[in-house]
Length: 314
Image (cartoon, rainbow, N blue to C red):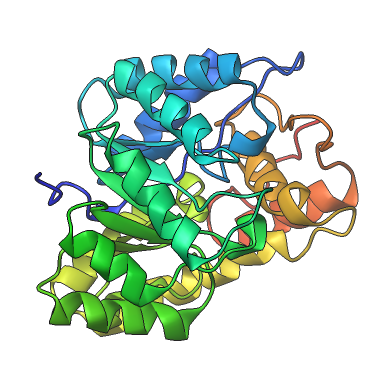
């Protein structure tokens, strides 16, 4: 199973909605093409930034159908198959495979929480039902299980999973995962989900990144990856400082927290930049308004992503 295609910058795609909260195909097409033209190495649909937890099955399948058609084989497509328990995830895997995606991404099971034995069996069971590359999505803040590095490498050596998308925020565990993966012969492609500490992950040996902020500034993340491959660490840090300041937009939000502040800020930025037509969110999350929008525009202008004299869209 060739997994070398899954490296570099693979943004988790933010999904644009119309005023009626349906998929905005015009903006979806514009955003996807913008990222591909900026030089990203793949795209990840139906992750946290894609509000997967808020989508019905029909909405998930609509996103995948349109996404694969728009991408049209230009870059690899990863699809989230995130669900509460193993056989529900397997069903998502079968559906996603039918749309022609290149790889699958699954978290540990949640709601009916188990221990390490059940988590490992979960991934082994998924493998029994798919031949596609499978990435383990380490997301303890949402699923309440931290994936153990030793278990992940064991699953990699056994051919169960082919990579890890690490959104744990645990840089110590990720560094250990990189070391154990190298000691085992690098069976896993390791991708950091950070926006702000991508330079450190690359320096440690990560195979790429999955930053939600790359929806906003894909060109900078693409340039950073190329600089890292060239060993130009001064440039890598310089770009990371710019991106870290751009990520301030999520810290400026006062009206809400969680998805509303994070993905809400990304949608608002894309709307103000003219990539999206609205900043609508999935229920029950409400779009940002007023001072929160103004604060995000200030960050965009300071980061050079909006003209200083551009008016705020209403």
